[in-house]
Amino acid sequence: MSLQFAKGQVIFREGDNGESFFVVDKGAVGIYTNYETDSQQKLTEVKEGHIFGEMALVDAFPRSATAVASEDTELSEFKLDEVKGFFENNPDKIKLILTELAGNLSRLTGEYNEVCSTIKELYPANEERKPSLADKIKKIVANYELMSKSNQPSAEFLRETGQSGHKDGFAKKVEKYKKGTVIFREGEMGRCMYDIHYGTIGIYTDYGTPKEKCLTTLYADKFFGEVGMLGNEPRTATAVALEDNTMLEAIYTDDFEELFQKNPAKIEMILKHLSFRIRRLTYEYVNACKLVYDAAQAELKQSVNDEIKKKAQEYSSKLYD
Image (cartoon, rainbow, N blue to C red):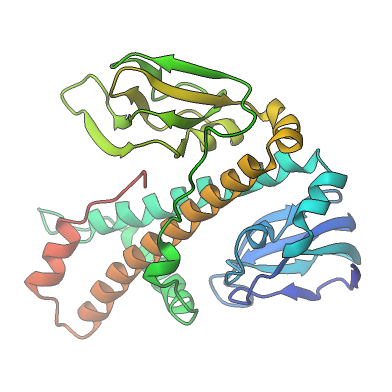
């Protein structure tokens, strides 16, 4: 469906149900959080030939931002049931869409880590807060007040659906690894993502040092390493095979078009995986913001208690879910 928007016209608003995605045929679109509020922030500008609203590719879920025409703009709108046909006619867009989703996940991870850092600074041991903390708290409180008005996902919606058969169908690069093999190291640039066909993978920070920490353990029919590859960013953790004969499929960005042609179900699985990680991290982000909000409200009412302080001091962020 072809649509036209005048400069300044809102295409969709943060919190609206997302049931379609858009391609910019002409013009440009600004993507904002907290649009038309004191804490308005422009996330990005979507230019001609690019896509936005891509979370709707997988889920009819509330929009996480507001889209506004930056100039007179022409768009093509695609509903959820038109995704397969869109990919068939535009196979080159598969990489673009997956990269956009990975970018959203990376951006949200940064925002989440910033809130977690703020939580750790709320009640320092010397009871002296940094001067910059007040502005951080104000920003987080404003964000939470807006987010709390939107419908948050239910526990069922946040549960990743089991997807069997990852090893079924076409796979281009599959290899077996011995127990203890490092698949990639923290700090290395991402070159590919992986699909676990058999075995177990441990995800660690500070692997092989006294500070080593296992963030999570992944089993068959799970993906990992997608953000580093799609975002062209350094790996944020180390992946290690935890048992012999661990079988992994390596997927490179140049494989996407062939993979869609020969095994389209795999592309759908990757989309759903990225969507789940974004949903889950959004949930964790809202909860982290709520803790800062509750602390700020308690301080306004001069009712800060040991329970709030304990929650803040013991708060543990999950960097990999």
